[in-house]
Length: 307
Ligand SMILES: NC(=O)c1ccc[n+]([C@@H]2O[C@H](COP(=O)([O-])OP(=O)(O)OC[C@H]3O[C@@H](n4cnc5c(N)ncnc54)[C@H](OP(=O)(O)O)[C@@H]3O)[C@@H](O)[C@H]2O)c1
Image 1: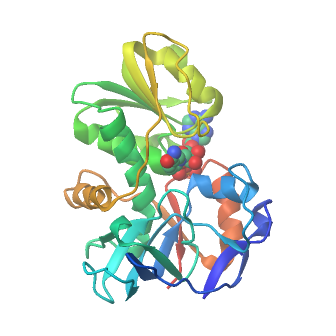
Image 2 (image 1 turned 45 degrees about the vertical axis):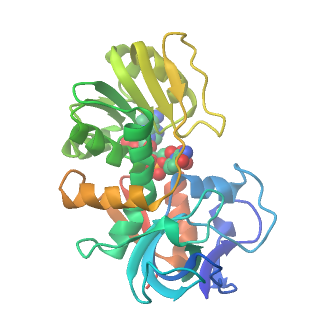
């Protein structure tokens, strides 16, 4: 099958397009002919060697996808050949920048007719991450005030809409070019982080959801009320310790399962959450797509159109 892969860590230019071995479904897995796969913030970090080093090459990136079931591993009874599905790879598995993937059937959900393959691929991991952070980890409730760092990104854009759906007051940070975009998503207040220090502009928050990391994550504790809680997804695997004894730092455990994928579909079909802006790339242009993602000022999602 064709795939985008790399043979050594490095910049976007190490990504090649060519033939790799077809996956074979094991017991409990489905084989999927992939139609679309998305690019996530973690992908270029793995390619660049900023995560655990890869030793088994060729290495195929890609964590979420949408496509059709093309073969069933032993014991799989809940899907039919040809059925449209979407999903997110289990923690530690990648391989969606390819024409096929073999994956545990429990990590796959039926693709609704109302959404295209590109839309499902775009929503899967960002939706799952936002759901686990906002609902399962922060347990955000109606009437609470939340600061979402990085509202124009994939995870941030889903999180804004979800927090509004929950009934929270949402403040978010974005660059000037994305202020109108995050307002359209429902943000009540937007801070242009290049023009204003968010620690001076915001206070008394019940919760913070940080998708930016680094210094932004560390300084985010300043906006919390006593008893406030903060969730971080971009600050390294160990997460952060709270520098304040009266606030908690939480690291969402983004487990992958069908139930969260079905919740994404339900939220979109109910009109609570919209699909992010999508820019399509062919898989053969993975290097260009990575360069754009790595720039860290992307609006919406980059998606590979594979079939
Ligand atoms: N732990 C997990 O399970 C998990 C899961 C998914 C993602 N992640 C991580 O979460 C992070 C976000 O992922 P993503 O897919 O949403 O990334 P993304 O789509 O690439 O988001 C980038 C966004 O960050 C914004 N941004 C950059 N610097 C900023 C700053 N200083 N303040 C506020 N906003 C800023 C940019 O908006 P402007 O152009 O407006 O600056 C851009 O829209 C990544 O580090 C990713 O690895 C972790």
